[in-house]
Image (cartoon, rainbow over all chains, first blue to last red; front, side, top):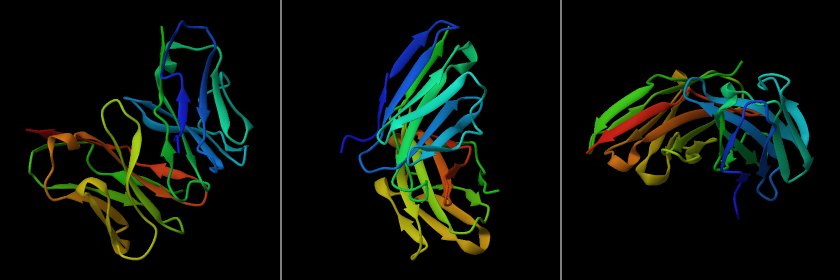
Length: 114
Length: 111
């Protein structure tokens, strides 16, 4: 079991550029969660999917953020255009049910927007 | 709405001291409770979980937690901490849809 795989591990980009973060779920998991972690706000749930369908995107900060699940095992989180305040560590997590049995987290993507 | 409260934001202990981190959850139907740990620069890892049965749950690395229904609490304990336990600890409550995380408690263990 390879676990939840995120890429890239680190991303440094200039303000205004598009950023795409990627996440591969554990085989057999059907729920996917995107979190953002900062010192100021802690761990924030951005969006989650169940069986490829977005269930709750109320945590997405603004329209610059979008997330997709083109298939059952893969998700992307896109920020366009990026801003310095988007700098954070972005985690994805997957689960076999809609969260009730705990998550397995990926190693995160550390995003720095300069 | 479901919520999870962690009482201490920062805890500093010396090695061999006992640890107890507080966690209270709001009632939201089925109670699934979790403690996660995040070591510096790493992702969250599951320490232990409670779904039903024995309210005293044992996890990895000598950690345990006790579910007290009357107090809506799920406190994390360890009898003797080590320097390697320095990390951030998150309590979480899982309902049908998603996990709700507490704000986290940063633990620093001094040699």
